Image 1: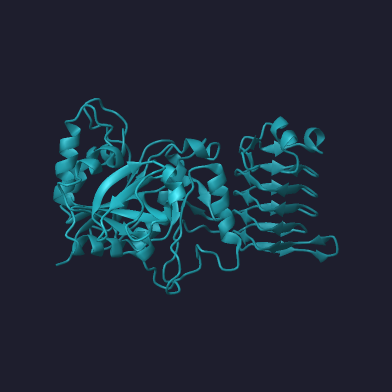
Image 2: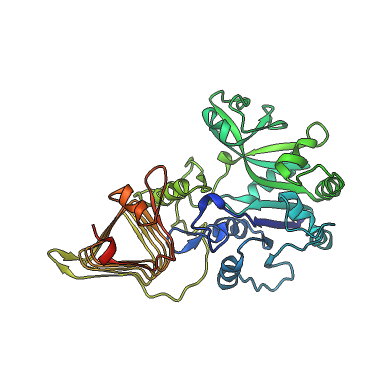
Length: 418
């Protein structure tokens, strides 16, 4: 039997902890890795897994995300069920609300499920950095004859307080949910780790529709899968956890660990960006059998110019996107977006620079995130003195990462030079 699969991508979160990177854009539209957006990971996973019927549910500050989907993710297949379609809140609730929770986002689009009549519905978030062969999770779901399967990742038990933890039997059947509890039960086969929910689900269609309609009648419900729907299914439906660490990506070395990062905070986002710099990073962007897809930009190649003492354009342990020009400056351990200009004598270390930034002559930047279109003036230092950085109106995180917003279009040497 050819399994009919319909996918929903939940891309409507505010991403408040990533502010100011989410000041003008939805969290899934935040740039990552020089030329990508966070949403590219889940969409690439779906397409690479052979799932081509995808609705992207959008909500807050969606213009940047809509533009990216139009530029990079328009699917024009020969079959009617090949599509990636953005769907705003339909205001189908009695109160004509925006999406009130993860389950409500699906409920407001329940007609799309009924019209498509799939065998299974996959519901994935758009907030994380990871690669996953979703087809293998669906095969596990079918093999277990499950009503719902929840993707789970093993994490050290001391981190249980940070996650929704899934309690399972040795064969993977879910028997409990524990929301951010330090004493949550560990994995049956590993007393040092717990199963953390990844917020990704595979539902058998009949059960999903039944539970969505039941949840709609509950006035006290927050209309969320993790908080409301899944806990009510314990003991009444066949519900299993899929161990993400068993997932195999074609083209990756056998036995290589699976990579998953929650980039919900500025520090977590920065660390995930820095993960890309190593010689053999855990997150392999260069696997041609499992490509990370994005918009097809018409960029010129990156360019490095001048080869003179004290004026040499270089980049080491870094990622440099198209149309960027390193002109007599030095980039070390950093990620540069598209169209960045690095001028003579400047130094960028351990930083993330978004599109179209301009780094002036002899400027020095370290451990920083620069929003797009920021211009750093000649001789300016960023990331060397936290107190001075805060006086300039820049955000400095607990770990000392300096974040410069896009509205700081020019950092003037006359007032900010150290």
